[in-house]
Amino acid sequence: MRLRKVLQLRKKPAKPVSWIVVGLGNPGEAYSRNRHNIGVWTINELARQLGVKLNAEGRSIRIAYGVLAGEQVALVRPRTYVNESGVALVQALKATSCPLIRTIVVYDELDLPIGAVRLREGGGTGGHNGLKSIITETGPEFVRVRLGIGRPLIDGKPTRDPDVIASYVLSNPEGEERANLEETTRYAADAVKTIVSEGVDQASTRFNRQGLENQA
Image (cartoon, rainbow, N blue to C red; front, side):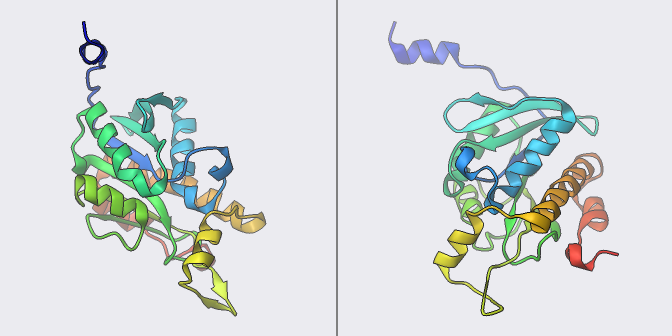
């Protein structure tokens, strides 16, 4: 029997879930604490709360299954780099038979201040390479949870210099900034649970926020 046919026979059947939650970021220890990986931090927080471990499945994802807000969900961390996130999401969709409209993508947002959170259905890429990849591979009809990391400054002003931005997102926050972003991931995990249980509109009303400096 040819190897290809053997592999097809061994292929796992899809495990149906109600929702997929994907956290964007780069794989590997070297990137694990970067600002760019705040989406992954959120998945790790949800996995901790559910008491599940994400295991490698195929070449492109780590995945764990659990019950979140009474619904069967799959938590997903891409094993791809951010700019190939669409490849990972395609694999997750195939593994779960979940529709794209029931997919929540959590990711970092330069144009929101640190600690800001925005929830919405559909939309564009906002210049985020992970979203560009996902939309190219799957389309735009998924739920976004945008987590503010702030934009780097030059002479006290926000910059769009690509080299400065790359260095910023691929470096580790420290001190109070780190603590604020960790709090944001816990807040985002609660927002995800509310999306699953009550829908995006209700969750947006409760969890959209300007940033930690604006909180009472």
